[in-house]
Picture 1 (cartoon, rainbow, N blue to C red):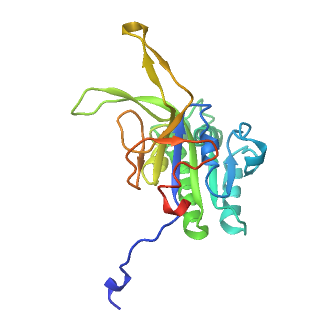
Picture 2 (tube, rainbow, N blue to C red; picture 1 turned 30 degrees about the horizontal axis):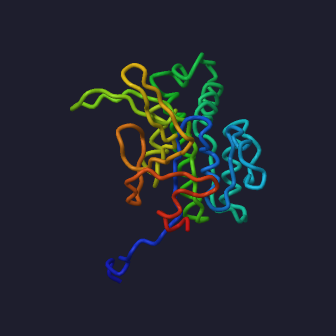
Picture 3 (cartoon, rainbow, N blue to C red; picture 1 turned 90 degrees about the vertical axis):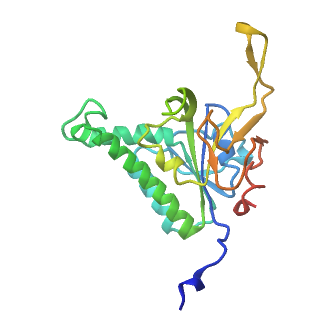
Length: 251
């Protein structure tokens, strides 16, 4: 059989998405607007969701072993969930870091000294994030599930070699942990308030009417991207998945 006989148009598949933003903007609520969600909780962020729309959730994690057990159950046991929400990878960063420090018999004072130092502790934490990302891929392939990673936002200084340095919003993670949620995902969305400035000179102030927008296209102001040709900010409405009209697998 010719290898060319395997060529065809790729079919719609489940997606892996990262949603990032400041606290209190509704990142978890947005993530739970994906089809039939179940939440793995490294923090308890479901209190703001109305009871009639609150999704099923596992007990709040107490350590990485509990996380791996919950993921194995979703991969191997029968269920009807279509989306896994991880809330949040920022909280997981703290949990993974503490786990690595605690596992070192030399009892280091922090992650910088863990596992002999020289970045070995940070590498171990990054490997745990990579394991989580691999599990999301298995869920997509084996169960057809979407995965949404929720992350808190932070700012970082970018110093390009060919231009002036500037600040941008990014995920609140160590740089070694970030690739699992940015490099090989379908969407990185930055959720923010739509704001306007008023006044002149030093008296300018920012105002907002509460409208939230999701940025999924490349921009210097924040980490964001998508594989679906989205080039404009998307207005986020309560109870509505803002990506459903752009991604066939969510319709």
